[in-house]
Image: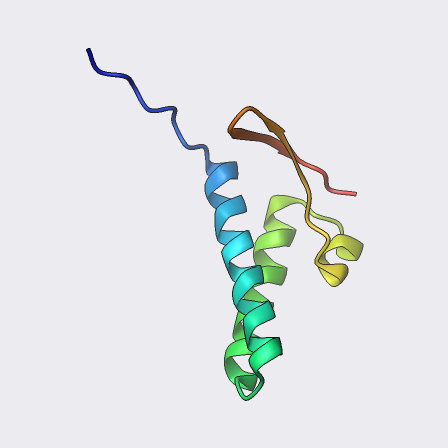
Length: 79
């Protein structure tokens, strides 16, 4: 008997990508010497977070939050 894997939603894919970008941004800030990459990653975070519906304040502070139900993200907390 095969168990079906729960479908990963667009919101979950966006969330995972946003979290990965934030990790990269933190690493580049910590390590220094990656000004162009940092600028590129920061810009991508700003665009993706805005697309997802986060407020300008949450984007500026990088305070991204989501509501989960089990293993799934069901909504973001925009503000």
